[in-house]
Image: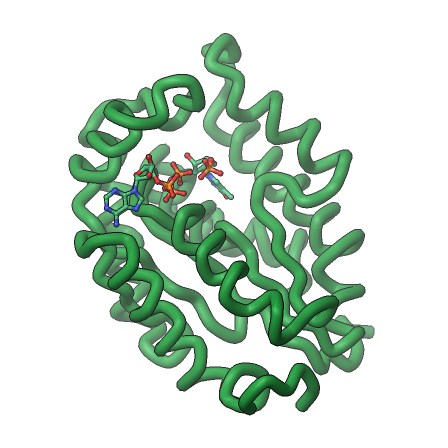
Length: 225
Ligand SMILES: Nc1ncnc2c1ncn2[C@@H]1O[C@H](COP(=O)(O)OP(=O)(O)OP(=O)(O)O)[C@@H](O)[C@H]1O
Ligand SMILES: Cc1cn([C@H]2C[C@H](O)[C@@H](COP(=O)(O)O)O2)c(=O)[nH]c1=O
């Protein structure tokens, strides 16, 4: 069976809360959209379609204090499955470049390490959801967990979700797991120094993408490979 012929590319944006992934992604889209047009697909997890966005509301609702850790892990995986089926796979079959704000590495870091379920257990459970679909490139926005949380507290008070309000020790476990993933997958995961000013972060991310995906991004003004 398998996933079939995937000619597109999947690039995921990962990092601790407040690392600046979404800000950088928006700037990168503004840069690439004129060149790539419809070939560019921008999405996020949990979310990216109606069902997964509904699951997102449940997971991130700060009133859902009773949620069990494994329920949380399963909900993220369920949202991911629907996202893959409805949006990511069709785009990858259609030769498109998919930029996704968070993916499976978030589950490994947050549920596996942050919640203490275990990275391998969460990875294994997600294989059922993804059927092995792995990003072609992951940008890891590297910033100290405390700095990320401070950015959110200062600028994004209205969007603070159920995971943002976890203890600093939780966010340190998440960060440590990400750094382990970075060490374990040097070919797929590339580090962006997210402690720098946003413009510098965006340029570093674009440079990495251009180097890793030359057929999409190196041609001057051309959208097709
Ligand atoms: N390089 C940067 N330097 C300083 N502040 C930044 C930088 N990048 C983003 N910010 C600010 O930090 C806050 C969090 O940024 P953003 O929402 O992009 O982070 P994120 O990684 O997507 O967070 P989350 O995963 O929690 O959604 C925003 O207020 C944003 O303006
Ligand atoms: C995909 C995914 C996400 N999370 C966490 C990480 C964040 O705290 C929220 C998502 O909010 P954001 O503002 O869109 O970053 O959910 C997680 O714990 N596990 C996951 O698989």
